[in-house]
Amino acid sequence: MLNHKTARLRADFSNCLGSINKMLHCSNYMPNISNQNILDFNADYEKLHFTAARTHDIALANPGQRIVDTHFIFGCFDADADAPRNYYFAATDYLFQNTLSCGTQIYYRLGTSIEHTVDAHHFNTSKPADYIQYAKILAGIIRHYNYGWADGFHLNIPVWEIWNEPDIGKKCWDGTQDEFIDFFCTVLGYLKKEFPDEKIGGPALCYANKEYLKTLLDECKKREIAPDFISWHAYWYEPAALIKIGFEMRELLDSCGFKSTKLHLNEWHYLKSWDGVLKNVTPETYQQAMFGENGMHGCNSAAYNAALFIGWHDSPLDCACYYGAGNPRNFSSFGLHDQMLKPNKNYYSMKMIGEIVHNYNERFAVTGVDEYLWAMPVMNKEKTQGSMLIADCCGNYDEIEIELKALPSANNFKCTLLDQENNDLEIPVKTVNNELKIRKKVQCSSVFLLTFNTGSI
Image (cartoon, rainbow, N blue to C red; front, side):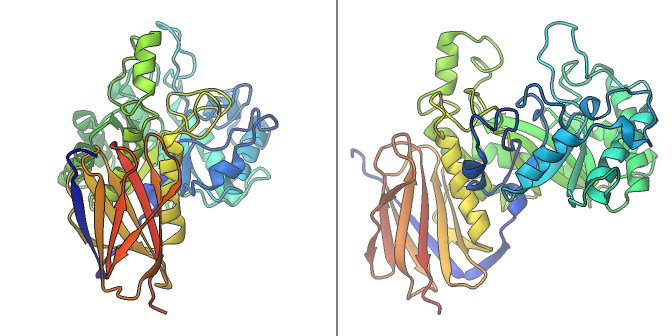
């Protein structure tokens, strides 16, 4: 390779930085049930080890199923919200049981999926005619899944989110900003009174819309209620810039008096431009947006995923949900499969992250990183197994040297590589004294997963 460049990382296993935050590895996708008999994604999904799956847009990925969205579960708005006969839970019950069987918990978005209908033809995003009635319906859903009501369950669903992207327009909220804030505060107040121990928040703003959020928080303060978390979305391609937003949102909440309110970035995905994805879609722009190193399914996206997971651990962010969505039988811009139904680069990067989340507990200090090179040394609870997730997010380096401090007897080194041409490829690990060397196969963004025995026992 020309212009040979070596990165030098020093992982200090005597300096523990704390526990791995498993809630930074959540998703907006759960295994599809509408055509599960044709293509069952459960086994592949389980390998991703997502901590929780947010339910937004799940109804869109399961055509023909009455699931998740409030209008599907409670079809007649004026009916008695205290009567179990007025709810239809069966399909959502199975969806959740299926997801839980894969080891992933539920993150419930209460409300409706987005409507990509034309002009003013939106049907499920209109503001409810009666906010208290809507709150009663949502209370019935919470009671069913966490308290056994209406032949229900005790799933201990940890997160309940009110609505999605009210600031994006009629496709998500067909009403004014003031009307939504009134709706949100009314529903939040009602639900927190009945379920004081549940984690309830929102409103899943379409970006870090600080002005909108401040207005909402001011109204919450007037009504003496507090969301357990606030949520927003971000589609971008520079890890450092996206991580910075978490600090800005923390500062805003603290300044408004909501120091205990958590931060949830519950939709995110690598994206260079909306052209070819949701606007100006032509065969040419679609090809450019999806494929190649810079595409949504390319190696830059995969490295971006790993870099964010690493970087968020040193930020105020409490929860992150990857927007990996779509029916695995159909190619999706945001999906985890290619046109041939094979797992794509994003799938393999999420699998690497999932292995960190599933197999290890503590993370340790590392030096030698920069805004393009990201690394996280980790160890399991028994301190017998170690690992290191490394993401080169712009193709700067072609070789990485790694020193393992405080692990003089570490052994059995293995490394898998993900790049534009390779998935889960095992590559050689050269060892000289206590220093390791790994090399890329292709000069492009790459993700490495190094594993080893610590030699501690």
